[in-house]
View 1 (cartoon, rainbow, N blue to C red):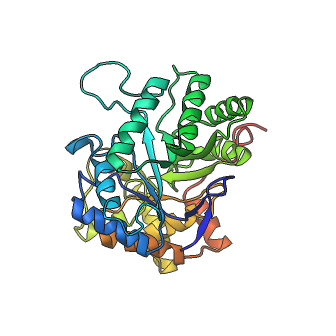
View 2: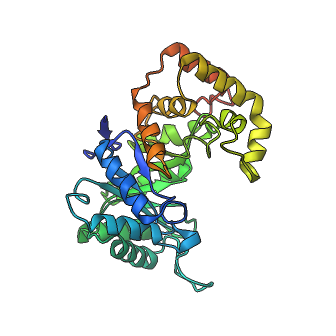
Length: 325
């Protein structure tokens, strides 16, 4: 396993991050425990979750599953760089202050996550979304308290625009606070809009980028081959995207066949070549899917292959050059 620093910090994390969103709704607790053990066996030390994960079986369920795994001991907690998130509403009904980024909810949410996770600290505490109503002075004051209490170590963002990152970092700088250390964004060959402003902002401020949905819901994982084999049939928005971009995906899977590589491996290997990217989030439902994702680390894409991928999936220059002289 390869390791790298998370942004400008001294923290070293694996080049793949284990996403746990399937734990609970799609992966039973014993299987989730096995996947986490196998992730450690493969050298993956970076795990990502959120307080709302487990929605269909109960918000917080995923954190509970991770907590019961930590409780088995054997250095599981000590070997893991644990990232979780807050923002989503955790209560029932419309009662206020059960979500978002008020100082009150930050205080309540971290204590609830720590209890579910069965740990006394969170390595990376991420804001799952922008709260336009909460001023940065309030957010950073609350986060500073958590750092001082030893409840969190680093702070990260998720789904922020480039200007949100800039505003957050300038507010943190005024307080002599480290501020954001990472940004978790939707980023893959099919969705490259973060190249306009988010990636440049992350590079400028020293944030590590953690791409989520690196296979775009499975569309970059050989979906057409699986469709022909009767292994998978998409519905809803994924099916609409497939219909709209079928020709592009056909060319992509043909290119993967030319390279003798799995399409999913190529999608992950490509992300690992991108500026500021620390670790794509993989979300295996099974041990087999975990092994397949780890295999991508063995694939090296040369400049010719990278150029071909840019032809198939045109990206963006940084703004404003992308749309102005």
